[in-house]
Image (cartoon, rainbow, N blue to C red; front, side):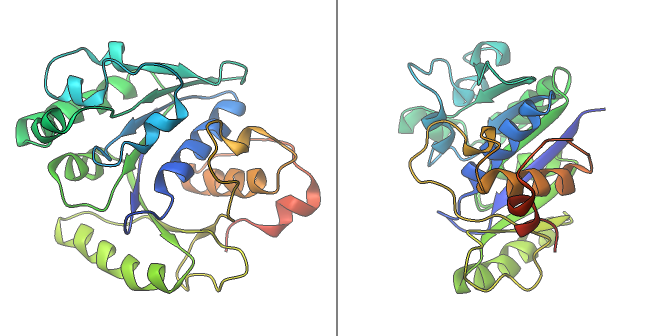
Length: 242
């Protein structure tokens, strides 16, 4: 049965897209099929992981100008499993139309299409304030907050948790991102260190990276699965579930 996770940033710039993409690459490395859908229409960060022209994109599907299959972009072909991204990459006029109530309902239909084809569906969700973000958290099986392991994360994550509760949604886990030397978030369920910046290919595909074991441990915890991936023992023990 397909698992659908909404990864929700507690604020802008907290690394939600990176965490989502790294988790997707980890699942694909373990032999699973996974799709990532972009609900962050404003920042369009998922598009940076795709080379070449993006047409049609997810906003075109949400505005009923294209079919869902046409917007799927296969990535990381050398991994054991299958991974596809469905990015947002559009002019402002279409982004505005993609945020309507009708478009949000079509976005939920996209999620259903992804469920029918993939083992896992990951939703890259910005701070919840627009229709497509509400649609994403409503459609998900589990909702995960992503917050930096800083004072900013400590300030913002209770607010976003409260917003989801106000909308009638439970929060299933909290991921502390950039969890290096800074104190961890007190309520964090999982921790991920700072990865290399400005990457276009996920670091998690490299089993020798310190970053990859932490992503794998977080992915296993959030997806309730065992990925059976090999990593250097010392690196693997540095990060994981709190």
